[in-house]
Image 1 (tube, one colour):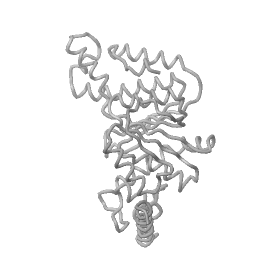
Image 2 (cartoon, rainbow, N blue to C red; image 1 turned 90 degrees about the vertical axis):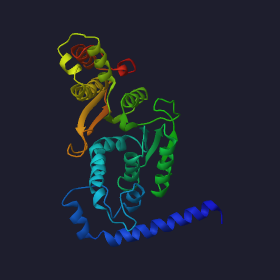
Image 3 (cartoon, rainbow, N blue to C red; image 1 turned 45 degrees about the horizontal axis):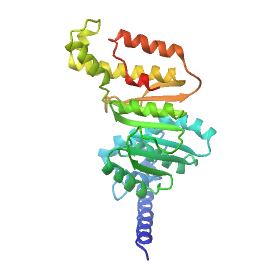
Image 4 (tube, rainbow, N blue to C red; image 1 turned 30 degrees about the vertical axis):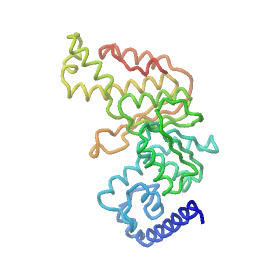
Length: 304
């Protein structure tokens, strides 16, 4: 027997044993105790292989207390994107996604799994990240979750010219301007869905620091001179500018809290669906905001 056949047989046996333990452990009463009336797409008794691959379930299929919050977070993330994916399912036989700066691929493996087991509609994922070790971990998780036929991962930069058409671009906590890179790729490829959860937005803050160091006058100079206020204000203004630029590019955009603020401050999801042509009024609003906040702006404005 070949090494590949042996590995596949071992994995199949592991899956069968894990799913049997999950069915035994997750009785109706125990599931109700966990969910407490919450509606979720990914129930632990039905998704043991996925949740174990993501590191959320113990080997006995139980959910450790330390992972309960993460379990509900991932269900909420999928729920927030549910309406957008319902639209995509109505238009495409197979939904193709690019996960830009995929990290450990929680969200895209969840979406691929939902496509396979909940929606019964193929969701194909390409995850891209600069970190080769992270990509190796993504591939390991994908194999454990038995999703390698719909999810693949490659080492590369978000802006690399990847030879694939996509219906959606997702970036979960891509740091600083990497979120703008994901948006630019999505707009360039005319992706119908762009969903980004920004992280560590520093481009505006750097520009405002230069204004403060140069003694530039302005109504916001007290904020420019105060590091904490500068950082926090710049993050929100950055997201507002990104939303305006997406609207200017023809997208219907919403900002949604996708993780409770009691868990993390980095809890904003910008969800954009392509609807029409360019919106000159939104572009004018962006330019007005740039002028009002010191004239710095985002490099993204020159890219889309």
